[in-house]
Amino acid sequence: MSKSFIDHVKTRRTQYALNKDLPKSREEVAALIQDVIKHVPSSFNSQSSRAVILFGEQSDKFWHLTKEILRKIVPADSFASTEAKMDAFAAGAGTVLFFEDQDVVKSLQEKFPLYAENFPVWSEQSGGMAQFAVWTVLAEHDIGASLQHYAPLVDEAVQKEWNVPTSWKLRAQMPFGGHKAPFSEKTFMNDNDRFKVYA
Image 1: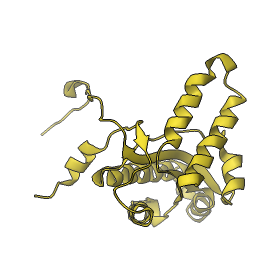
Image 2 (image 1 turned 120 degrees about the vertical axis):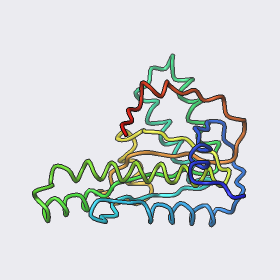
Image 3 (image 1 turned 45 degrees about the horizontal axis):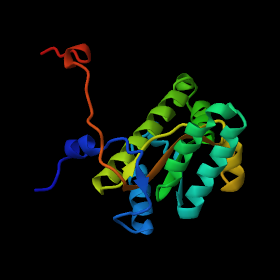
Image 4 (image 1 turned 60 degrees about the horizontal axis):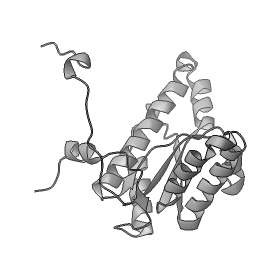
């Protein structure tokens, strides 16, 4: 019996222990990521989400650049843990860089001034759905991932290295790869502290 959507949502977990072994080809993984982002909802069907998908050496390069940028601001005596974290991300098979196109947001603000202040918020919500959807589809195919946030520190380097339009605002980075270790147990807060249901 095939798994339901909620089963795949439950399978999605943060995986820091990554390796470069993928159960699918790079082409198949890239196609999965593109397809799921393409079908994520967006306000006014704005389709503001963008992605740069890096594999192998290109992904390694991103985490090396990030490490060197962080080296300039993290105290030397505490940099070892930061370096270990960057190396762990680089140990994966690839990285998805998630962006929101600000030209799309500005265009909607000009076209629909009544909702102008909402479009940046709606763009962020759509971007969050894109990140979650990609994470879930990767989990569905037994690919581990985590979600990281090193913007705006790395924005300029990313734009220069991968020819990213200046209107694309970097929002998150998702290193992914094979599972090098099992997940730790996940705990949940009490439902009564989180939900209210009225019928």
